[in-house]
Structures are given as structure tokens and as C-alpha cells.
Image 1 (tube, rainbow, N blue to C red):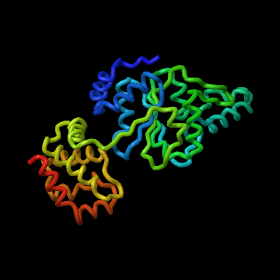
Image 2 (image 1 turned 180 degrees about the vertical axis):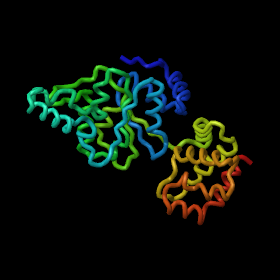
Image 3 (image 1 turned 30 degrees about the vertical axis):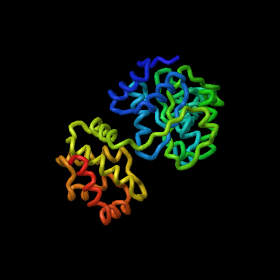
Image 4 (image 1 turned 90 degrees about the vertical axis):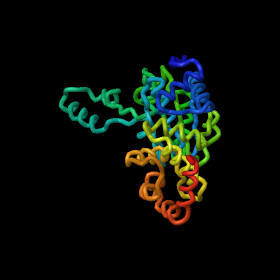
Length: 295
């Protein structure tokens, strides 16, 4: 049974805003359902659109501990679920040889190193479990994760089965570098997060960069929206817009100026080829378009 500090989608949406996250109605709805129905939520979208931040904001709203499992190729049980503290066990063995302890205690809970999945499932406190970039993990780990999320229990052969007494709120994110299995999607609620409209991106910048000049927020967001229309190796996400606006504001900018834009492109573009392409061909047009937004 959910003990969330909200009972409606509107209350959750307001709570997310207080936590520094501007969620649209669709995202607020699936976050609400994931909490109330105790079902995992899969968020997909381009890198930098706010998938990870949504989970972090939920943890703040729920006043819950955020436990994050960052996925990568080759991720295994030892790094995701648990492993034994071999160095401590070795010390225990030496003590056993001296007759001060029993070797039968070698695989007790005190020697178990709990990794994110076991830590989240075994917690009696509120937890938001963020399984970040699940698309980067191998098929085998995805299949294992499917079993864990079906039963919310993990078996440690030496200790038995550890069951969740309080299900965590589970948020999985994917940048869609590969297609996830249908079986995993069936277990979860699903939501695609797209790049925001210009108006919404300006709102996000104002929320995340307090005190940013209004013209600068509007022009920076418009400039980044223009960048996304180009054929870039890594189009910037909302996270880059926020970083760039923060950098420009820190440098005292009140609106976009050619020299300042060129010198700070590394805050919004992360590939040398992209920066060079924008400098060589598109910078003037993008700047004029962005400045036109504010007249």
C-alpha cells in the first residue's frame, strides 16, 4: 500500500515542481501510477531530456532514499546485487585458525556486501530505485532483472530468499541504444520523454537557473532548439541547455553575443566535430534566429 505524500496527479505535479522538476501532465500521470500501483516505470528518450532527473525528483517528493544502479556492458550480479567481502572473510578464517571464532559463520550477513538491487529490495525505508540506462546492459542481465522485478525478491544461497517488505518505486531509463525485450516492457509502465517545446524549455531554464536574465533564458533555449535541427553527432539535451545558461549567467551575460557564444559552445556541444561544424557554417544564422525570439 502506497504511503505517498500525495493523493492526486496535481499534487504530485506540484511536488515535483517544488523539487525543481517541471513535469508535464503525461509524465506526472505515469509517475503517479507507478507509485500507486507499485509497478516499475520505464522512461525512454534521447540523452539529456530529464529521465534520470525525474527519478531524483521523485525521491525528493517521496522523501525517500535514492538508490542508483548505473548499467553498462558486462554488468554482473556481483556489481548489481551482492558479493561477499572476501578480505573480511579471510581475516575471519585466520581468527578461526586461532580458535577465537567458528568457521561456520563465514557466510553470515555481516560479510555480505549489498549492491543496489539487494539494498533496495531489502530496505524497510522508502526507496526510489533508479536503474539507469538499462539499454547499455547485456541481454542476460536484462533477463535477470526481469525476474527480480517480477517477484521483488532475491535469493542468496547461503542466507536464503530476501523479500521486499516495502516495494521500492522503480524507475528504469533507456536512451534506446538497443531495443529492450518485450517481456521487460510488459512488466513496466512506459513513457517516452521528448525534447520540450521552446516555451517549456525556457520555463525549465528559469526553474533550474534561478536569477537567469529573461532574455538570456529565451535566447539560449531558442539557440539550442536550433542546434537540434542540425545533423550533429550528439544533439544537446535539456541538461546541456541548463548547463549553458548557467555558464553564460556566471559570465555576466544578459543576452547572446557572438564572441561569448563561440567561446562557450563546449558547454552545450560535446563533440569537437559538432563544435567545428556550428562555428564554420551555422553560428551566425542560429544566433540571429535566437535573438529574434526576444525581438
